[in-house]
Length: 135
Image (cartoon, rainbow, N blue to C red; front, side, top):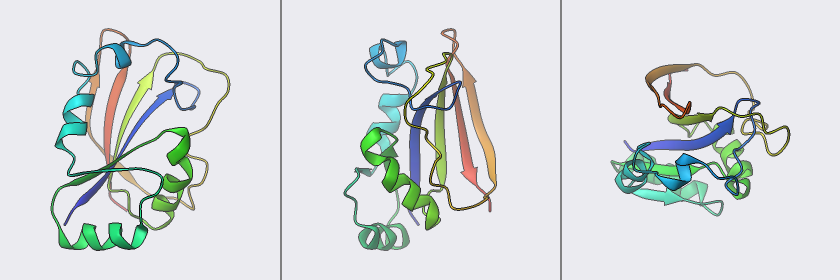
């Protein structure tokens, strides 16, 4: 069975981190494991993903589908949570207060439980946390 992985970059106040802002994440994605995550994904998904095909792919194939939280995919990600399709969240927390923007979790339909399966703090103050869905 395939896994659906969400990759997200958020600020301390819960907004999607603005990619126009200079950051070591964008300057050196290899250091943070971002390049490796993207290259290991069997499928890179965008906002136009077909849920029928995705559901079929998750049942019939192995590997990882990766969707990155960006303004264009937020609605799609909300729908993925609504249909319990997201299996893992890789969350990068950037140590800044942005003050406004797009929140990552605005369309979550209800409670779910997640277990931390990994975490790493970098000298830059950025933290990477990985969670898998358990309920």
